[in-house]
Amino acid sequence: LLAVARLAGAIGREGVALVHTHSSVDAWVAGMAARLKRVPVIRSRHVSIPIRRSWNPVYSVLADRILTSGEAIRRLVIGAGVSPATVMAAPAGVDFGEFMPGPDSGRIRAELGLTPPVIGSVAMFRGSKGHQHLLDAFGIVLREYPTARLLLVGDGVRRRWVEQLAGEKGLSHVVSFTGFRPDVADLLRAMDCFALASVRTEGVPQSLLQALATELPVVASAIGGIPEVVEHQVTGLLVPPGDPAALAEGILTVLGQPDLARRLAKGGRQLAERRFSRAVATQRLIALYEELLAR
Image (cartoon, rainbow, N blue to C red):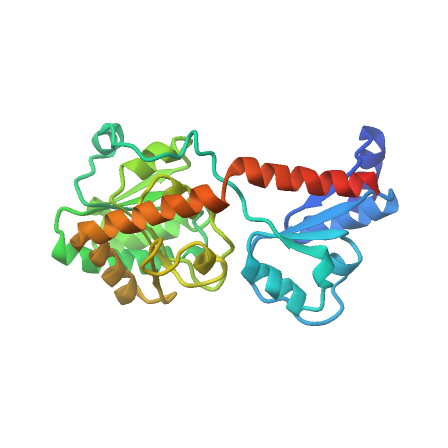
């Protein structure tokens, strides 16, 4: 309650006209503060964790609009009893000026000592991203491609655990952990296959959209909003979540069938251009802001 009061004071002092929240605690605290100051609220929902079907004031009372990162999460929110009129699917967009197809410059592979084929993933290190399953899948891939390397980009609370797990599996010498990097586009272009092993929950992942925009063949879990982006055998390959053998099979298919890999990569790029432009996503958000402010 003290945080609500302080935030309400800040909204008043700074002349805040609209509040946009993104997770649980801030949705409650900022939502109540905004209501006290009679300021409109947008609540974004990024994950596909089920919402209990009951009275949900954080969605029905403390928000004027709900933005979801995809249609699957929109259906989930509506299924919890929220009015469909207030819920809009609005995936993030990709900057096509930064994320574009192009040859690997060789800088990343030289810097990290990577030898082909390079399987990569860009994701926060947390339980829902399934890094342990990706390690198991990569172990299977390594039997067919002894020179393969796994490139894990990102940081998070589980990074140290995954590094320890790689050591226990005897994979430390073939797995590169980069930590946080600002040059994600270059890292993607150094990969031969992008893999996302998410389990339990997922929206429409930004890194997946970026991989598609870079015209990189992708293999990803069929969970959350991922199937909205990865159409099996058209824009990528879908595999069951939590199944390292299936994930490995998908990666091996991409590596072993270059013509299929190129077709999937081109299909992914076309989808990204058609539906996930950052300019379109930005204009959609601005239009929603203007609508609420006009009220």
